[in-house]
Image (cartoon, rainbow, N blue to C red; front, side, top):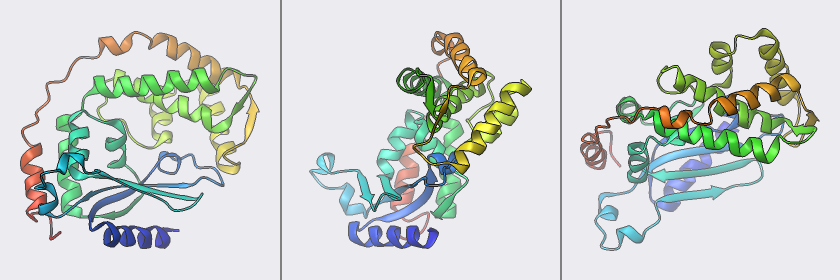
Length: 259
């Protein structure tokens, strides 16, 4: 599959006249809980030639490239300028991309420089809001019945553990779900139940259901209630935006390799 992904990325570069600077896996495979039939969610950051950014109608041009290949492979990417605007807002999805354990393609020098910007622009408050919204929304929509789709448990558990990570002032939230569990879940009964759920997820299929797991559901309910007003308590970050423009200009001028 890696070869197919790289071939599709190269085809996109030619078709769209772009240069891909970084491409990775996102979603369940990167988080560490894929099912047997999980698809591949490939995300990338790209840049175009300098003239494209100097167009009079630049503001009306798309800054996203999307390529749904088939049911198993979905590829999409953001223009670097869009990515930097989102980094300015401490966008958790983008931060997760650059912490992905599965990297398909990268300009090493660019990736290193981009990663150096993340802790400078990281906002615990913004990320906490994001994970809070994700956890509570998925909980309301998917975890109310006596049977639960396995994957939906993880779409609530991971953001809850991410909020715990932020609450404890541990810095940028790690991508891998098992790191969060190992570091944050100390109740052995709960940890055992989560590990069993993880095994079931990896062996099963995306559409698989199971009976409600009380110890996990009770933990989720308790933490969501505890976190209900916590977002307001997160301190606002003093963010330094001064490095974004020089970084973008350096990339555009070929400081990180020819375009």
